[in-house]
Image (cartoon, rainbow, N blue to C red; front, side, top):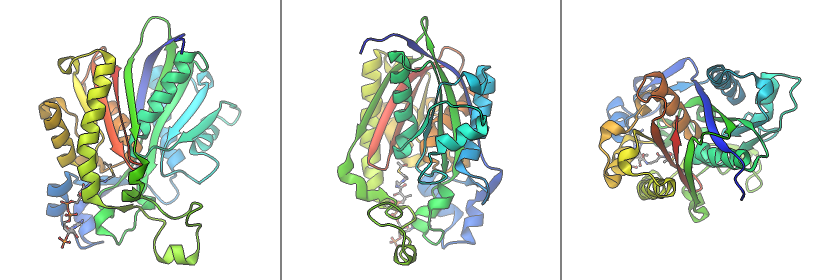
Length: 330
Ligand code: ACO
């Protein structure tokens, strides 16, 4: 492809629902303990959306903050992309609902992208390609999830792991700067049955039987997912680094997908990075799938963990399996 533009990151934003669900609260719902959850996952609490607070609502709040940081109005956005596996509805896309909330007179194209926990990095790659090709100039990219509405609250193997939240980024064409140094993506559909939501699609259309069998909730073989996540994230991180032409020492901060502190520590060890260069906020958020890397990046910026011009690596792994990494400059 003939590269017409570089990509500038104009701003980021994030939003978490107000309601906090702690591990101690979970002890009253399923047979679990704060001690088990903390030591096995690193999670202490997660945010849970209200019944009438939808994925597009939290996506909207994150987007408004990102637009404010970028100092642009919704009218200047020429593409809206939402990475999510917990959409408002199967269709229309959450991106269309978000567009409506941003301004009912807008006609900006909008669509969702589904790559599970790697969704934001997949979205970043798509946004980058659109901007570099010259097709779109200014893109709103969102990672938003309400996984609390897709878990079986009687299954302690899964319900303790996930949470709700949204992050947004504004990307724009630039002739001078290029803030996306590289992106790298992979998928392995052969492992699709290790982490999935089987009900509600064409395989298992909703019936009373699928409801009784709770096929509308996330199913996961945690140990297998764990085993695959560590090498796959390390591979993606190395490939993106190679593609960027940068060295490990050039990376100010690593922002891995926040699924499990033990996965994060194992990936850091494999890459030879000390944990003080790795951003962790899983204790407050739980696993929010496509929203983890962008909300963590937004927090790292807000708490001055990174400064303008710093180079950061994002890396993720999720259902599919999918994996990916990106080297960016903020
Ligand atoms: N509280 C108490 N006990 C529990 C809980 C719980 N919430 N959940 C499971 N257990 C029990 C199990 O029933 C099992 O009991 P048993 O030995 O009597 O059968 C025991 O704890 C050990 O279970 P394991 O599955 O062996 O525990 P493990 O150490 O593998 O930890 C975990 C489980 C946390 C799910 C881990 O495998 C993991 O994090 N895997 C990655 C999964 C993940 O992060 N998925 C998210 C999406 S993909 C991604 O984002 C990377």
